[in-house]
Image 1 (tube, helix red, strand yellow):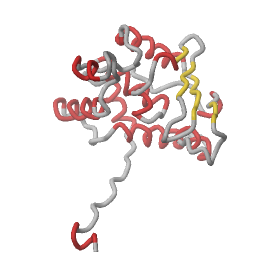
Image 2 (cartoon, rainbow, N blue to C red):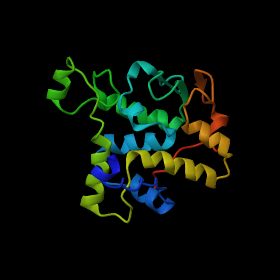
Image 3 (cartoon, helix red, strand yellow):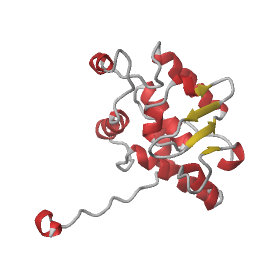
Image 4 (cartoon, rainbow, N blue to C red):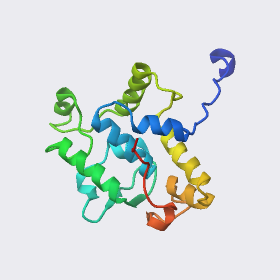
Length: 199
């Protein structure tokens, strides 16, 4: 029996929701601007972290305030309307990205060279940035992962009175629930706006 050889499976990690107090500390964290912008966009859009670190500028229309996420193994294609403040965050990233085709280009020249001269950041970059901040600054924030930002948005949407079906639709991209291509309209995401980074 596999269980006899490998032992019992470790308990499945429960996703956590950051509190308002924890969000305040996170949004005012002393970290590299690109990492801070990445976290804000993840919170504001509830996309998977992979969808952001793989994002290309050709799919982001800042003039139309829209981000197109192509169909992938994890879900159907999707168009996400961007709040004005999120457009501003992307504009900052556009400046930081330089000539790269990626929203979040690789720091390492070696990684970029192996990918033909241009590449997106490693999948571990945001997780490591969060871990470094938690270890270095020791804020009163529980240890969390980038995926927990999706759980946080969902929980806060529910707390604001957004219907469960709407919050699920904002996070889910399973084609069985919607057509192969869907557009998230502003009404889908409940109250307008994005996480505040004001002190």
